[in-house]
Length: 100
Ligand SMILES: [Zn+2]
Image 1: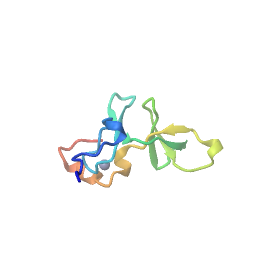
Image 2: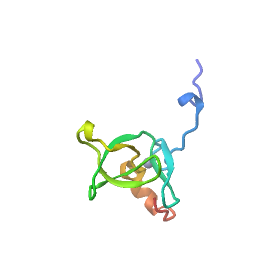
Image 3: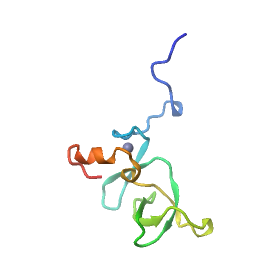
């Protein structure tokens, strides 16, 4: 029996991966011109000023939001900045001093 050296995921399509934890991420260009690494899966968000969570909209706006609420009142779909969910976020802060 042969074990394939590299399993093919997503039909071989290459997704960028987080160097810290290996999660699939996407880069969204924000209004400020920076590419923000975000979790690959979009989530529903509820925009609210002063909320502790951040969301990046598909057109690159960063907003404060709640990540749960009444579905009928949802603001839309957006992407969670990866540094908010990455278990290795602490690690890349110290590496090269790159700010995410
Ligand atoms: Zn990560």
